[in-house]
Length: 185
Ligand code: IMP
Ligand code: MG
Image 1 (tube, rainbow, N blue to C red):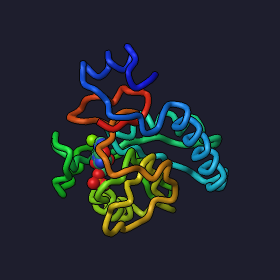
Image 2 (cartoon, rainbow, N blue to C red):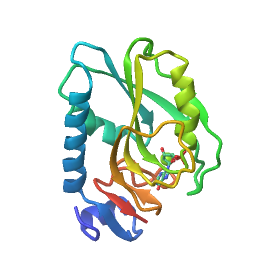
Image 3 (cartoon, rainbow, N blue to C red):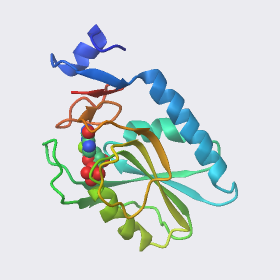
Image 4 (cartoon, rainbow, N blue to C red):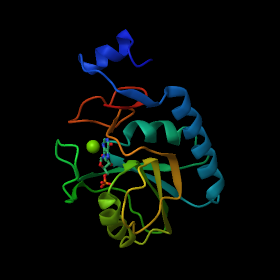
């Protein structure tokens, strides 16, 4: 799908995209590399829980877990740091807690994008309290503008430009998650 094709226009409801930042092939290739690296990183006989941060990570997580060639569990948590604007409010609320017990498991927290870092800085200590065997972060996109992160992500798909990005799960006011690439508005 391209920047100005009928398929893209149908998903954009008439709005124009600025540019495609990472196209479908680039994303797929990078996700495959990340899946291979994650497969390598964990001992095969130890439990791995892949924890997706909803909603933005749902497409990335779906593609990523299919590139991880080992047994794993999937669960989700929902935190909210953005209203419907494109600037961070600085406030993070936990709206849904994972059902899975984290204790003793390797936990891989999967994020769509790290922007200010507020979400991760708030979540990492909360998850650490549950005594996982390890806690690592994996983000598809990292804007590298966060002043201070309590933990650097171990796996990052792309160092993203500090523009507002949509598609491949990322939204603007809940729209455009269904674009198959990452684009700027
Ligand atoms: P942070 O707490 O500022 O690091 O922001 C993290 C969350 O804000 C991400 O999980 C996204 O849901 C959202 N976000 C940050 N930047 C963008 C963007 O460029 N496009 C869409 N959502 C974003
Ligand atoms: Mg969002």
